[in-house]
Amino acid sequence: MQPTSHPQQAQCAQLAKAFKALSNPNRLAMYMDLIQLEETEVSACCIADLIDRLDIGAPTVSHHIKELVNADLVHVTRDGKFMRCRLNRETFALLGDFFKHPTASL
Image (cartoon, rainbow, N blue to C red; front, side, top):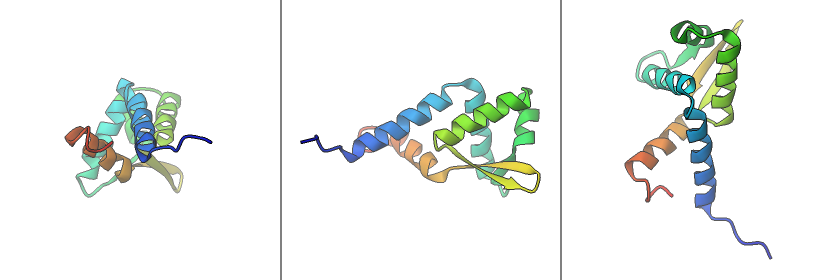
């Protein structure tokens, strides 16, 4: 008989993925940009804008975006020839709850 998994294990795994992705300074800067955009009328950011802001190459930005997507921190959509990033509000809320009440959220 296998031990039953606790719902908290899924949250811990999700938080660990998010923290790992955000441990890179460039990814953290990208995520912080998206948080700021979320508070404005423009809730999505073109990947080309991130390249300009961070002054790093397109392949590096693409890699970082992929890591943020894999950690469920952002969503990426195609808008014509442009790729747009948007904050994943569910994961953002999970992170917020964790920092407000670390022991209660798990």
